[in-house]
Image (tube, rainbow, N blue to C red; front, top):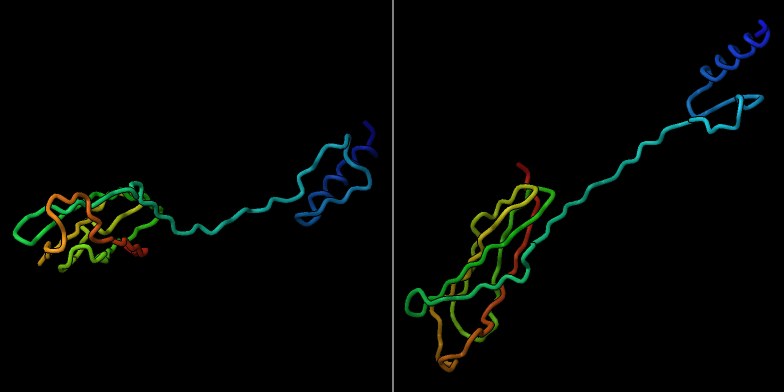
Length: 151
């Protein structure tokens, strides 16, 4: 190899290393037309809040615990990518008059998820408008709400 070709090779390397990132300057492409790395680009994204109630088909069945008082609970399986707090509200359908309430035990769920126990309660139930033996009467709907929680 001659001094001249060695000098040209070194000069090409120096020129390539002296060029700013994202730029290649050659008069002749090196050796063969091989792709040359010119830049790297970071890929970023925003991760949103995600929560999933796995058993959305859950039902709360009220059972009599005292005269005119009924209670029932169900477990919810929750999957989430953030720490959340569950809350509930209850809306009577009007089928059975009375005082309705709901509560959640284990309302604070940490990622990646867990279980919460949702209960409904009916006090002062007035059964006068329903015939005895009626099964699975839809008396109320519990709505579950969620909010992100900071530790």
